[in-house]
Length: 268
Image (cartoon, rainbow, N blue to C red; front, side):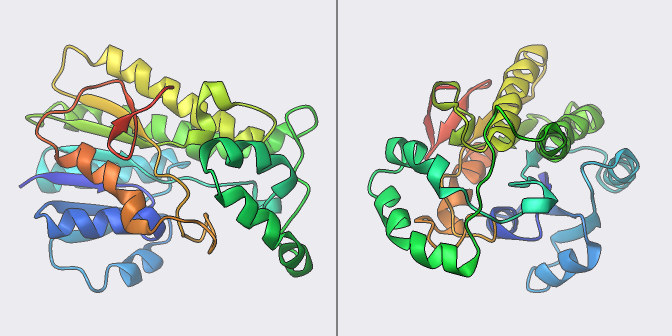
């Protein structure tokens, strides 16, 4: 049986990836920072899903999961680095609409105007905040996001490469974002954007380093998805957001060292 490990699998896109992979007949290891929340999220799944505690910022947590995976299965076929955060805890979930307009106009035509029309209500609800740009953001905020979005994925790859090498064709899929595209970088959410640009670079690095093995490494952008992170105004469903990750995990022939959105290669 093919074994897939999904970090941050207890909610949003990660949970949908777990659901789709389980329906396709894979054995799913759902990594959840809060074990109880993970078990609650997986209550409707079959016996082919196991929930394990996983905090990608905690090396001990990662090594415990590797030990479990090795003892139970002896290998890992697919690692999907989905766990990620949007902002620092001090400003979690708040949107800086004033800075994000240019990015939205470029990447999501038509959606930006909808957001602008929603601004009065968002301000009244206290959802909008003035997030600082690259010139004045607190570097502690940058470090906080990097710990999960970048270093977390790096820790996972390092820990699980020995088990991925035991697979007939190991795959690493990193959940990135169009906000990390080099050509689009600006002061819009600098910490988040930098964490995703760095994750993209990590994908290229490991793809080259592992080219003599059977492991393929790719990054993907799910688009703007209606999740707790993406918010209710996002145009995409979680099923649409998960699609490319599932495709990269299941397609018979895929390249390595590429960046995808909607199953199509995009620029780094």
